[in-house]
Length: 319
Image 1 (cartoon, rainbow, N blue to C red):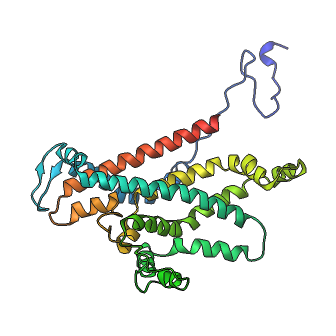
Image 2 (image 1 turned 45 degrees about the vertical axis):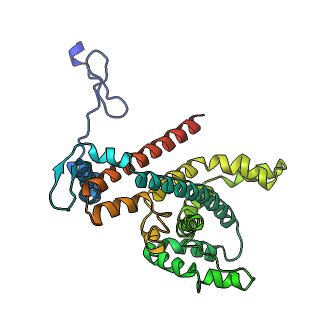
Image 3 (image 1 turned 180 degrees about the vertical axis):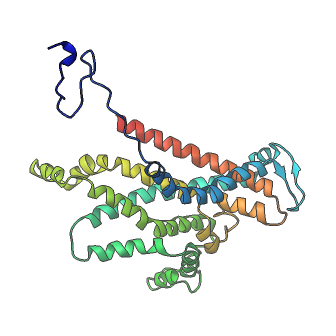
């Protein structure tokens, strides 16, 4: 029998050895076009809405910041003059100071209380679901309604808070008209409104921790405090980073409930950067360019802080 008449038996899997003893490359299966495009088609509606209502207005803001409009109709190209003006504006610098104080207080207390409530609500006890719902309820309310509600409660003469304090012999406290108290009230209301949402995020992180780790620590004699600082807190670092970033963005963007609560008063003590942008762009004299320049500054502040928080979190995880 000649070599040409020898028939090679197919190998396992059905492939036939190629001449020279090699194996032919596996044929690539062509993926249907519909399956390739399906993920993008699901994302497309959201991306269209995001582009129309977020990306395009943001790019337009950068463009408008290069113009000045003192009457809201006639625009004059001024380049970077709007940025130079707000950099030397005492009002803007004061607004940045108030915004920084509010955001730092809001972020720090949000992390503390959301972690505390999440740890408490993660234990099994009667009525746990009820307390979770009650804590999250303020997050579902309108920010405008929240501002009006707490404005009534902190009203100086007939507010519920002062009436309650009056029963203990404490006189009227000017919560919303004292420069030293108003910003603290605003931070408190912001916490009351947002803590429930961030607590759920931390609670989700807690439930992702293996219970066996805690059981092993108990066997080794670790106290509750030791278990929190040696197990819970380190394992919650990624979740805490998420809360840190989101609460920082929320702090810098706070406006609606503050507007209905204090209107930015007294004497501008609770005027934050978003209100400054709103007033410059829509109050007489209308100066869209100056308001847009403030928006650009806010964008870069939030972007820089977000990237710094993200880089810090990545470095901690790598360590």
